Length: 154
Length: 418
Image (cartoon, rainbow over all chains, first blue to last red; front, side, top):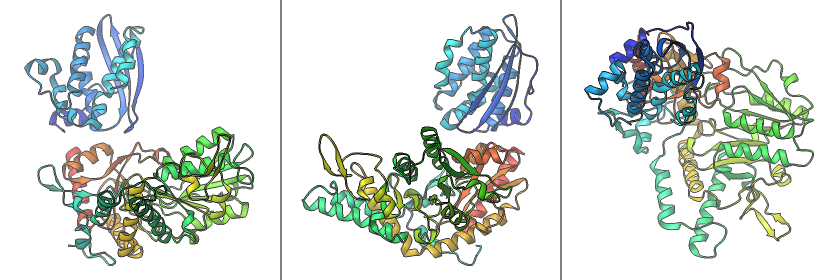
């Protein structure tokens, strides 16, 4: 579960700290108390910045760092594809062995494949990704807010 | 191997608990330190449960056939055993519920529906403490919201004890009921019952004691406690899940109204009204958890055969050893009393800024089972400014070697995330 990539991101997080943003959300994982405050800054349809502050376990913190590294500078369409692929991997209960195509999309985030085997920890890995999706929807003025009720049941 | 005074013969005891031989994660023998969540079950209990279903299963108090009579005798026999175990003056003071939460909800609802002088209403106050399990907070919050009563509580000192310095302002003439935990499930604190009971009696308030973390670990004498109600659960004391106990003083159980209605709790029923069976049956609507009660009776026999004094002494020795060993671990902060004095065998701690979920997960990889989170006592975490803790909790089969395994495991955790 604790791949070196995850531990690296946990010990040396990318882009941590709150900076200017178009929308801010605060998400909590009630079962273990993980928390993240996350801001999204858009530049047209490009993600100019994802800044965050949070507390929680290594999985939730490393996941936020990976998210920052992966999504900043990407177009929104590509970012959504990455988010959806990560969600699919995390919901796979350990049944998906990431192939080259998936690895190309997810880069460091494939390291979380092992976490998907631990139901109690999947929410930790998804916390910042759900927060990003929520914040992006708000930054776009509720563009895909209708999907939110669905994600809460994850 | 470490020898401590007062230890039980754990080598023999552990043979009674087959699950303790489980090997997990490629050959790691399980080190079970999550006893405050639930205890393991000895063969003596498992055999009785199996025998009940194999030989005697029937519904209780209804049939005239041989199985029904045997099942009834076993179920009521379990009540006798539990009554003796807590030194109840009468077997009719022992009400079976499904767990301690149900017992507490039952009391809260009795008082909400009661007539004077027991009735909780908007002129009265309810007192709890900041170290309660959610099961001793939420039922009282519900009662307060529904009746308009005021909910008050005792705060905590920095070293994990109840702050009773303002006891006369907290428990007043308006106080109707004081409900508090005998041994905290998160801090391990053993609370000074006598001080609280004395003040409650001065103002005529009822006293409810949550003994969920006491009944498994020390002699419990409801008469000595001088409480009005005492609750605990079976599964933390070697019994099965699904069986809890409410002990209440007989006159209260007679005076207070039922909460759940149904079969078994009645005397006569017409389409217009019903009269109720005497306690304890008045509070046991529907088919009760029969096998579970019988299993709890077996658990009580098992614990009694070893001796609650001896179990308490064993756990005190283990706790003393664990506290001293844990204090050797750098960056470890015990949340709760820092010594084994007036302390139960549940020890919560934080480890630097490593999140408890990470601590628990890495310990699990070593075969060590601990509990992580807020332990259904979130106000305690808020009080001490921490999101969660790791908790190791011990029982009659715990050994010094298991304490050593935990301490080694924690060193491994520190190196892993360091």
